[in-house]
Length: 285
Ligand code: SF4
Image (cartoon, rainbow, N blue to C red; front, top):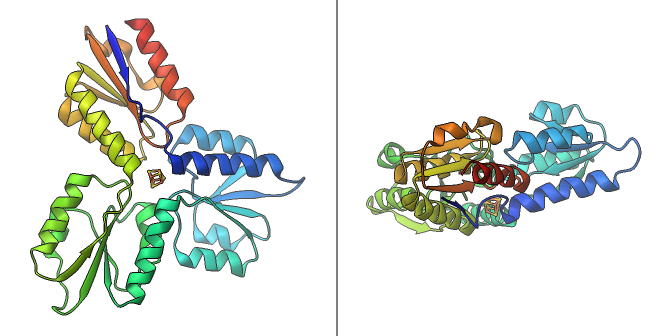
């Protein structure tokens, strides 16, 4: 019996940096000092609960931000719109920016390209905070394309220049397909593949493991978009794929009489949760 754990399972660089930033701020805060994160710092309920227990409050809306008078606000790895930085400055709150540098790079690109007169097209999920953040740096006319239908419908004036970027966690093959549909429309298009390597490597490794095992376990928060995509990829390669948040969600009997089990996890899954699953699956087999 074999258990194969993906080398790329767990926190990516940007998430680790953001989580470490919160704990650093918690450790050095003075008495009575308030620490907030603008939105959950990562998509993982277990980590958020731990931070809340240490006194970190999650701001869930601009209105909540509006009500603050003093304190430190940590910006999460997904990044935020420019207007949020403006609001924080206006309210003289201390900003600790944990935006992943790869996401910050997209903010800089779209800000520069839209200032140069290009229409920004973001390939991604319009409801995802990272995409909303990017959109907030991309000028008035920016739009988001999520699927084939959006790409087929996309139309602008003939002489408009277009700059396409991607949500960092978007599926690479889907990105290529959507870019191809837009490029066929003969606009002046420049394409910047801003998908993060961490995501691509995680997806590629997960797929190759899923193709060879009898059962696959994908660990991550139900709201984590990169974990959802990881699950889709694994499920396509291995019908017997399970999406769990923690060990409690896994019915070990369900795995049945399999000979090999693969384990991977989304970018916001802490190591202790992965290890717990791995150790228990090993015990069973
Ligand atoms: S997946 Fe990539 S872009 Fe997103 S937080 Fe992690 S390192 Fe940054």
